[in-house]
Image 1 (tube, one colour):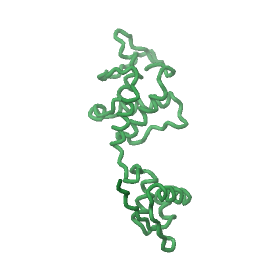
Image 2: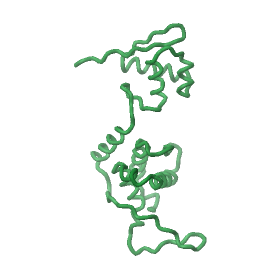
Image 3: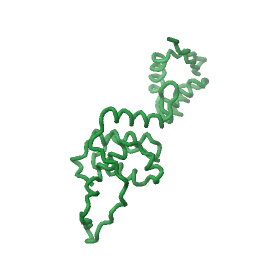
Image 4: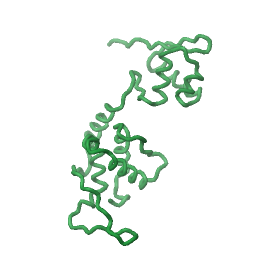
Length: 192
């Protein structure tokens, strides 16, 4: 593995975000409040745990970052290092490398767009499985109280109100109340 200090932090974070968006991982890799070394270890471990088919289907940015992290292990003639017990460390099976020194901004943008296609969103730009998605769906379904929506989304009532106000402004939602129950009708899209 390369020295942690030589790994580009921004590219590592982008690669982890893209890997998280592929849907291959059971649990997403955390980026906030985590040391760079731990992010690298989690990233490498998660890539190695994927099936061969999933590894082949990984976006180029993820493959390039993985290969960059382990670039020094591909050096031929290098003797395997010994671990603390004096035994020779086992080499990881060699992966087919796609050598990329640094990705252009255009390529990074293409990879992000490719990864974004994997994540499902509703017509109000909320990603499936997020609090915003749950709140949108329950409001559009109608007949729910703010307390019910907050409980279902795993958040508080203030968050639901703020989201409702944001969606009213962004998408011209028409909100009607019947007692404590809310009903929302999305305004028709304007034709240009």
